Image 1 (tube, protein in one colour):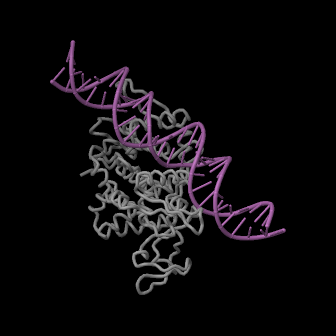
Image 2 (image 1 turned 180 degrees about the vertical axis):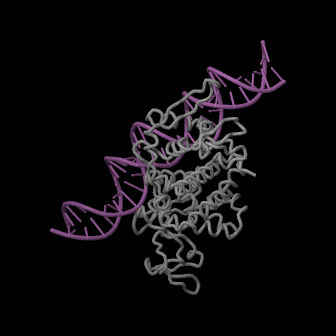
Image 3 (image 1 turned 90 degrees about the vertical axis):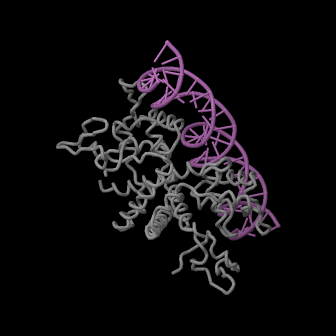
Length: 183
Length: 183
DNA sequence: ATTATTAGTATCGACTCGATATTATTGCAA
DNA sequence: TTGCAATAATATCGAGTCGATACTAATAAT
């Protein structure tokens, strides 16, 4: 009976994910496509390749490859090949793509009935949990540049000490695959 | 930007569910089959039909029908047709079925690194969230008999005032589809 | 120059999805 | 009692996702 609580928490997460997935279905977007599109809309320009989508989603390369092609067919994202490394693809989200993301699912509705402190402690608990799970699976955490140890805040944006690239103000709030928590 | 936190929480839940699902795959059990089997192992004898599995999982009747037949083929559950209403099927989990559930997934591993009070507040937050989501979708909550308004504790078990059935002690801790929180 | 690694695709069978239709059984009303 | 709606389970369709595996193309390492 030692595992009663951990089993319960896993069950809650699975049920929430399932009811949320059922709610995310639309005419032209299934849960996997939604997750990929949602990630691309929040990732920075160094983190929008099929491999990185795959890692963030804990999916498989083959599936993500198909998923991105489907999103591209539907005009929600656009493929941009790198001229430096021609194996590399970065996807950009189109206006129609951002519009498709502008929905409120059942989880957000339910969250509105939670007090702010409860929301914050829930977010903190889930964050810690995810961090542990990613660590256990040997995966990178991903995260916003402004909380990264390689990020140097600067007037008018920031600078990535790892990739040696200047960042616009809005880019410091995007998700990077190289993110490492500040010390 | 009002939705920043709720979006974040949804993203955390989706990522946790995905990394957990990837971890749940085994040779003879995919995440959906795991979820169905896990539910059947915890549900009481009034709540183990395909329809009820469907509702608990927020899945579809067709898929669950196939899923249960697959589990049955693998010898993890057994079909029992009711003699009273011959449309009705109740499934029982076999020894091999219970054995297949005896695993620790990545979420449980990560939970072990959380302090007990944090686990409890996380469980409470997720429970509230799920309750709200189920309500928003017009679905029944499911829950253990001993916390149900129709349950009368008795020496040597309990009694369901709704279904007019006596319950063994262990049955009062199982999940019922008719569950309604006590007043 | 050869080899290893990386990024992206393609294919296989099994499975899940929403949507829809069908069968069998039960309950209800005329 | 007959007729009809409601219910429970199953079957089918195309599209999509899964793990697994194999493949091409481009780059990096030796």
